[in-house]
Length: 390
Image (cartoon, rainbow, N blue to C red; front, side, top):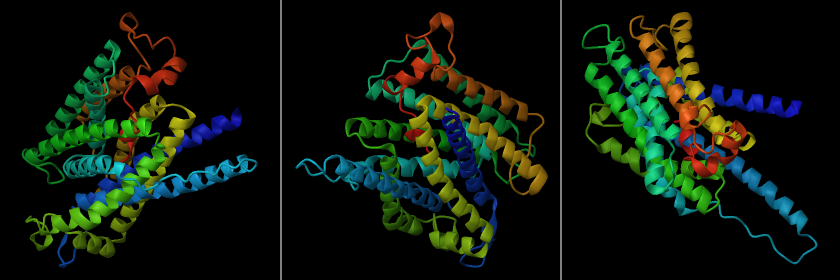
């Protein structure tokens, strides 16, 4: 029992640390400057290239899955040595992952573009919108029944999102431009893109749930295969096309990956942030899937919600105690509004997942926490895939 508690504590800590590292390193890359391929010094503004790094991180999960598969196959072979039956090889490569991969590509990139214009803490909080979209889409496409507690939780989350978005816009101290050189219009655009990304990610979550349950595909294989297909799509199609789309980047390109590689080469910090981002995704997915296996999807949702406050706290620590050009400052006027928004988001998440509930309108599942956890997979939208760090 003591070993299980220690193992669970390690998984939870690993999920919190790697999940927070994922968000912080991605934002730190955006805040870093370096000389590009043409010798011009500029900030690292390459959200599509960051999506490629994300897919590489997801693809690493396939290595873990292959190890697990080989181990399970050997165990089956040992069990059937006395029979004439031959173990059937499992298919690792399959085209059914193309659809969620495309959703992952679009959602991650939209979210990455939005991160250019908002602080990391605001970005992390706005990702809570996935609960709203996932709930609505699960009712429409999966024919799930939502109870009053779930709808109220979604309403509270929506109020929290509005509060966080409002605090982000109102925290502008310099009139039309923020301390990071981001205009009001760009900040609003960033918020809209992040919310759209959550809609796409919720769609991805619904598709993944169908695959995982209908085709009995292990979640770690879903993550790994999406990573492999994503690397192929980004390398052979998306990034080359973005290079030739007119834009205000180097070589007048919308996305110049050669410039991104040059900046990483010229600034070891950007390269370090990129590698940390890549591996944090892989480890976050491993820890997250392990938490779901050892505890439940409810616990994973709650831990991911706690990650938001950890990201904010580390961001403030970095800005005030380490390097002022990184992290984010605390706005004494509207920072407390943002805290209020976080509280609403946290409360809405707890209500939606029925960790807490209103007694007079409690659903049939809220007779006890153990019952909620056991019944969660069959009654609520599967939040595992959607909580993947990106």
